[in-house]
Length: 520
Ligand SMILES: [Ca+2]
Image (cartoon, rainbow, N blue to C red; front, side, top):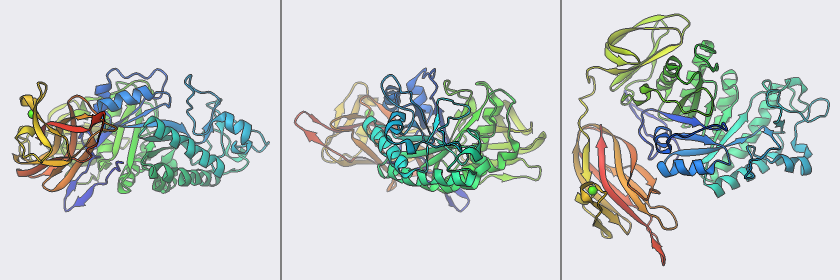
């Protein structure tokens, strides 16, 4: 199972390893929370290419399968509530909660949390959500068992654990919770649930990612909980208000930047959602730019108005390249981070700032700018007008698989839909190899498809002796599988392997590779 890898600081250069097979969108990826009833996917292929993480409800398995068919390396998480349960189920019988209300109601009344009057209670804001005793060991184990069974049987990549709360104050009067009448007491109960559940989910090869409630106000508590998880969400990142201009939290900006950096330091995934109108470009730039300041490759961003609509902004497609240094602040309080082909600046203060950019940049509404005025709580994502300091990006370098040295068990086959009309079919384990001259490059794209037989063929790619990706090829038609590389201009030794042959009476598993493209 993929583990997000942390950035390694080597001298003055950041070498960033993206998750295996991820679309190399840049140092910050994207998350889609699509849990509203009205959520739509106008184009599964586009959503699956743009997003590295998608969160769905348990009854939306068809959407999960459509996304994974479009991009087998996407991570699709199922929503499960930790701290509450509800009697309602989907029409197909699936629950949004880890433990079913009916089971607790009939067999385990001790799994409900009680108030100081001895009564069960619901959340103030969500009167169908009954508070459960997250500190009860039996409740914790049932939660883990039920969720793990569903992750395995349905093929989810992991679980998005909602209501992982350090406090009950957003749901109920803290001192009225009989067993945990303080934030430290409730935090300890939540921690014990994560300590029990997280390791079991991860040991099963599934992802455990928690939505830590009000993490910014309970920073150290959330950081401590990361050890049990693959990552965490900050659902109120920089701005909680759902309309333009509303709900900025400049006082929490340093803490939320620290959340990104600390999550990266622990080698985990950081999911952030900034709230506003669907078209609020200032909020999107501010959130995305702040993520670019702190990310080492595991940070995933979204601007959301609700959890129904997908948003996308032009800045997400800018080719900044890799960061060339850590972020820093100047005396005025403006933060910046240089990239190979760009610059990110953020003004987290409450007053307007004029910044010198140090060279000519375009982007985020500016053209050929050498300085910029940043309003309070704003950011700019900028692309260098001249290609300095990195050498000019060169054209992609294409290597036809049929031109590579082939191992025994692999052969050239004619396929009208393949580049050059030919591809390589691997029927046995082995590696095809070639040397290819390229410019300095950061991405490698393998066009492949699989003959499926009790599982997908696995494709592994090495460049100059280092494995750069390994991916299941679940696609039956030609599909691009992308990995991150970091090579200087020159001759690269490329090898493409098939690692898991299988055959039985009715089928045999095979890998087909059309071509290899190396991109700057
Ligand atoms: Ca070909």
